[in-house]
Length: 156
Image 1 (cartoon, rainbow, N blue to C red):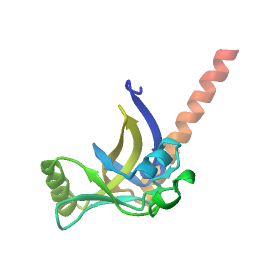
Image 2 (cartoon, one colour; image 1 turned 90 degrees about the vertical axis):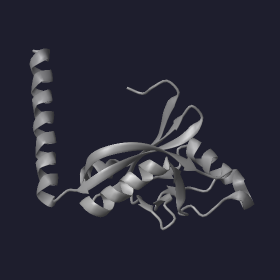
Image 3 (cartoon, helix red, strand yellow; image 1 turned 90 degrees about the horizontal axis):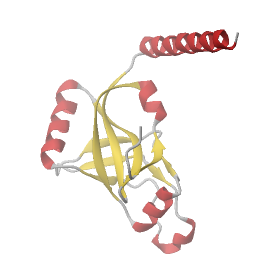
């Protein structure tokens, strides 16, 4: 259920298929003006993106594609440039330690507009094996079949 003042921009559906999401965090995005305008129009792709902590202890998202804004001309930036994520220093340190020790990955799950500010939902994820993906698909198919039979039964 969306909260008041929250508008979804983009989701990374592939992330939930390829990874187990252990925890999720909210981070602010440091963007340029034309990037914000383009994102408000929904022109953002998170498909192959990931987040990483650099040497200075700052968190960046790589591979997040924001299409250039049509009216932006000279003010448009590189669509794939690394974008800085805004989180508290203590949270960044905690995430960095978990990524280093437990072998987890930081994956962007969704981007949304919250009270006029762009936010990114960041997931601390563990990779799925092929058999895990098959199990998930089998469970979804079984659930879909159950719902279909229940719906058909109600009609009769």
